[in-house]
Amino acid sequence: MMNFMINEMRYPQTVKEDVEGKVVVRFTVNEDGTISDVKIVRSLSPEADQEVMRVISKMPRWTPKMVNKTPVKSDFTLPITFKLK
Image (cartoon, rainbow, N blue to C red; front, side, top):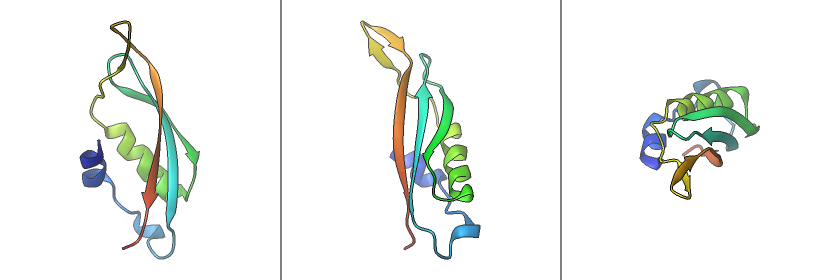
């Protein structure tokens, strides 16, 4: 997941001047490993939020949570930090 995020995430050019912080995103990992219901829980800026939603929606399938050897839906919350170098 981290390699995918590092390779795909682009710092939005429109906010590059002075915006740093975290975007917190919540999403559902379905029984088949696909991601759905992507929502921003904590916003940084509209551009940063949009970039996070774009990357999360592009992620490859995850391994779903298993309960009694049966895949089930599960929610996942992920903080993503935008920091200028």
